[in-house]
View 1 (cartoon, rainbow, N blue to C red):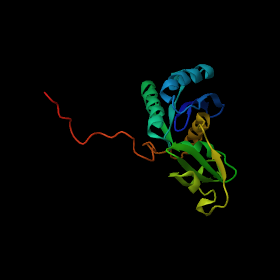
View 2 (cartoon, one colour):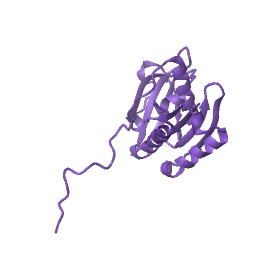
View 3 (cartoon, rainbow, N blue to C red):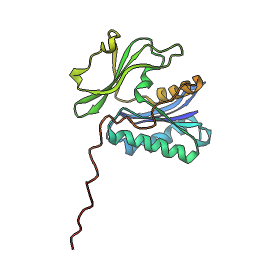
Amino acid sequence: MLLAIDTSAGTSVAVVDRDAGILAQADEADTRRHAEVIGTLIQRVLAESGVGPGGLSGVVAGMGPGPFTGLRVGIAAARAFAFGIGKPVVPLISHDALALDLAEPLIVVTDARRREIAWSSYAAGDELGLPVRLGGPLLARPDELDTGADGGGSRRRVDAATIPAGALGMLGERLFAAGRPFGPSEPLYLRPPDVTPSAGPKRVSR
């Protein structure tokens, strides 16, 4: 069983089991409340699923794409929880959750703020139903996105306000069972944070 956490768009937390599926999921669409709700959502899904921390085999972390401020909350929570229970972190690209068992070409779109979107394009799933990503994750202005990109014909577009942690967790279970690699170990922020360190130490006046 896995605890799955994603804050690349809204906040979503779930407990999943490879055989039983999604045992519990809790979501918060407000992109300004990641830090406020993450702990409560983790407690809720553990209680609803009846799974204690010792029953988990790992923690899935949605690695983006996403804005720096929100995305880092979920990744930090996943890493801290995994460290606390002595289990591994399973990093996954967040958009891939919506391409599990995909039967048709798809473009996943999430809000990247600053009048930009983050997108990834997919072909239909492979023989195991696992995602086949053709392009992205990348940033674009809304009017720049071509749903026929990558020479694959027209693709259905899905604008996701929240990446469902249940689907992300099941993706982790399915990848592990198939012996497939997980996602990147570093977050996909797609742009640097707004705050950067100063060039040198501040002068202290006496």
